[in-house]
Each structure stands twice: as structure tokens, then as C-alpha cells.
Image (cartoon, rainbow, N blue to C red; front, top):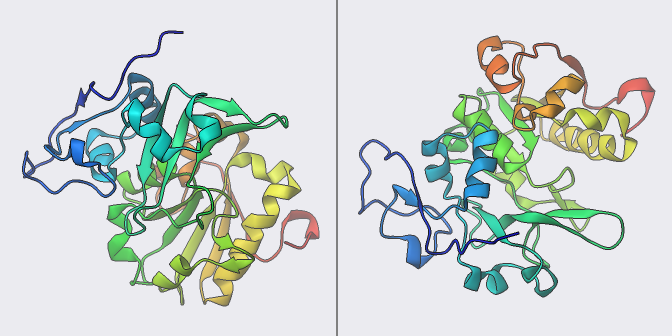
Length: 276
């Protein structure tokens, strides 16, 4: 397979209103990319991946997503991954710099029957992924807040007007057995909080456990937690898994490709009476 050199190749995107070459760069943007906010270095495969997730040009620019030059990979990846990928998509975490996560192209087998699709710096604690549009909701508990697994799904939800926080993984709200400090940045008391996992968690107890553990943790902080069960068909549209909300069917239909059915359950009691 031919691998393009992507560091010198940029994909032009539509300019955001009021922004131009002197605009402030997105968080995590390397110095070589700070000349303009209207052009990003994105490998065509990475751009196609973002398009499949339904992300607009404005969302991509605001999030600061980019493909680094090949020479930057040793700085961004662990040594066992550098020579096994063609390129990566870097997702900076706003307010948590220099933390980032990177999607690997192609995914890398780990030798134990699993596939590594995402990477974060070795030894780093997980952080919450907080897209820019969610900032105003963090300290206002009157605003319903969504949580989903995956940065792209969180971006898509916010793009559709639903304040949403992303988790890099279902357990990525804990570190060394304790809730991460990012949770303290949010006023949870009395807040309607909707946890929206992928549809496959309902057939796997190992995935249900962190979902309900998260729900219980947020309830101890005063949140009114709901876990939404997406229909199995929504799994085919991974960006769709980001959010569904019964009160907002037009936006739900855009996120879930027309699938409108969902099931609510208490965060403290898994289906079938199992404890989280």
C-alpha cells in the first residue's frame, strides 16, 4: 500500500466567520501549523473518517484535529507503534494540554488478540474531552449534559446542539481507582445527566460495569442520571451513538440516522437486577 507524505499536504477547509490568518490556533496545534486557522493538515483517510462521523469543517477547525508530519510520530507515539502506522489523527484535549489522544491508521494488532485503535501518552491519567461548545454548560446545572464514549461522537453531539462530554474509554473517568479531577470542574447537583453508551454494551457485562459505575458516581454528586439504550441498528453509525434524547427528536434523528427508539433505565440498577 502506498503511503503519502502528509506533513506537507493540507486539506483546505471553509473559513469560520470572522476568522483569518491571524486567528488564534487551536489547542495542541504545533508551531508549523499556526499560520492559519482555515487550513488543516489532514491525511485524506483521516478526513474521510471525520466526514463519516458527520463532522463539519467548522467543528474540525474548532477542535484542532490534525495529522502530524511523519517526523513527529516518534514524539507522539510509543516506540512499538511508530513504524506500524501510516499516519495518525491527533485529537488535542482543550484545557488539559499537553494531553491528547491519537487515532491510528491502520489499527495495530497487540499480539494478544486485540487491536489498538487509539493511543494516549504512556503513563498519563485519562482526562474528560470537553469540546468548546460545552464550556457554558459546565457550571450551569439547569442545562442537561450528555456523556458518551469517543471524541468524535462528542463533537458531533455538540455540533447538533446537544452539550456533550466525551470519554476516551468507558473507564476513562477513573484513574488508579479514583474519579479523575476533571469531574470536579462540573456542577452536577440537580443536573439532568444522560449517559449514552454504544449499543453493544447491553450484551456485555464487562462494558455495563463501567457505565453503571459512572452513573452511581454522578448520582453521589447530585446528578439525576439516565442511561439511554440505543437500538442495535444505531451501532452501524458510530457517530450516531453519541446522543439520543427523547425531548429533541429532530436532532436525534440526525444523530441516529432515523432511529428513534430508546429505552431508559436507572443508572443504579442494570437490566436483570445485576448490580453495577
